[in-house]
Image (cartoon, helix red, strand yellow):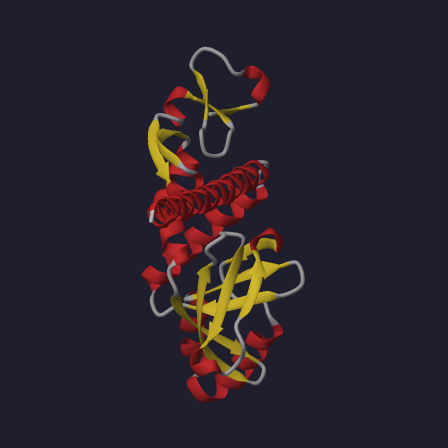
Length: 226
């Protein structure tokens, strides 16, 4: 069970990933998230399922079929490295890649929503017949963003169920108050990494400077003595 923050107390714990408060039974698992520098920390069931199961699936490039008014396209869809956008790539470079912000994701629908799909369905009814169109519809889902919809058809029922669950988990996480907390965690990790790189760079420059300084002193002693 999830609790508001002011009710934290005995038997209630905060998830080290999303920061929300849960009862002991709903936050008993341990989780490691490399991108957040979290190692074997307490996590709620939602975060454990998302980061251990759904996130690896979303980060992989999976192939789908996309139907539009001007034809059908094979595309790959994957979550970007920063986990803030979806990268859509068209097969054989038929179109330039596009990036869709996950913050703009409004819903994940089982089935198709775009006019392109409806136009393709109407055209296909005469060629493939209604059963074939129904089969395509049963393997499809739609990612509805603020300004557009991304309609995708999977290659089988297992992939359809897997993709639908993963994208709905992503939507749930991005729609919750935990999204801002996770973004702050990622920004903190990025800032710390940048500061660490800067510190290491300065240390290397210092060591190089000390090395050359020592070499100059050695040369002065050598040639000064002669």
